[in-house]
Amino acid sequence: MTRRFDPYPHVLRLPLILWQGAFFVIPLIFMAAMSFWLVKNYKLEPNFVFDNWTRMLGRGAFWDAYWITLWRAVLAGIIASAIAFPAALFMAFRLSEGGRRFALLCLIVPFFTSFLVRAYAWQVILAESGPVNAVLGGVGLVPYTMLNSGFGAMVGYLTLVLPLVVIFQTWSLAAIDRNLIEAAGNLGATPLRVLGSVIIPAAKTGLVLGAVFAFIMTFGDFVSPFYLGGSKPPTLTILIIDTTKSGQQWPRAAVVAVVMIATLFAVASAALRAAYGRRG
Image (cartoon, rainbow, N blue to C red):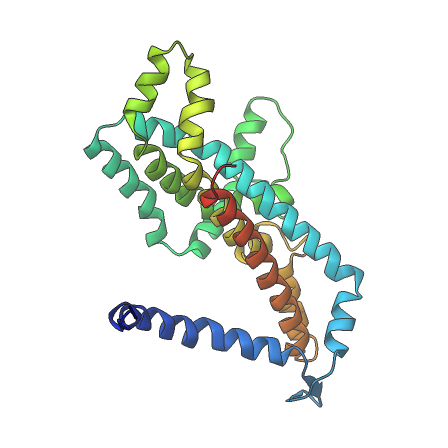
């Protein structure tokens, strides 16, 4: 018997498809096409040449920026996940439902303020004459250069992503069936064994998604490496700015952007398979 075509599910998907097409797919196609264009006399000329790709991918500066961006994004995801896990564990298993909602609200509140404003606040805190170095000097330690360094950039990255990672992990941990934990304890499992064999596998989806969101946001962040890291060494986002300022080379900047998006797609796809894939 032939099944009748039901248009209702497709109609429900239509707004999302239109939104993604208008604000993501079409701009992405345009940017990819622009990477093959040329700039002559500071004007864009539609073309189809590989000159921009060979110039950018053949530069050592591009690959230096790529690997430093990739490494910092991975490191930020690992550090944010490690710091967030104890807090999320406490919120999921020790706080009441009302207390957990209040704690999650407190994590959302920082996003009411522009991230650029928070970065400027960190500039004051991490400066050589700032409060952190004042405390270090008060206990007899040598002032540490935190601003305009990799450390400063990492502080900015964690400021950006840590609340989101805690929220992802808390939601995932709070959804775990408590009967599984009680059963493991009744069978003689130690708290550490319960954590490694029951809690972490059951919350795998939230843990992986939190880490990959931290990676994605860090990989494309411009504020932290520029205002707190001093652009030393430059990341891909800073390389895009520098490229556009150099003779209005938007096609070459588009090459960098396309490589970034391809990398994010690859990492996100691998993360989703790890988060939702079935066990063998």
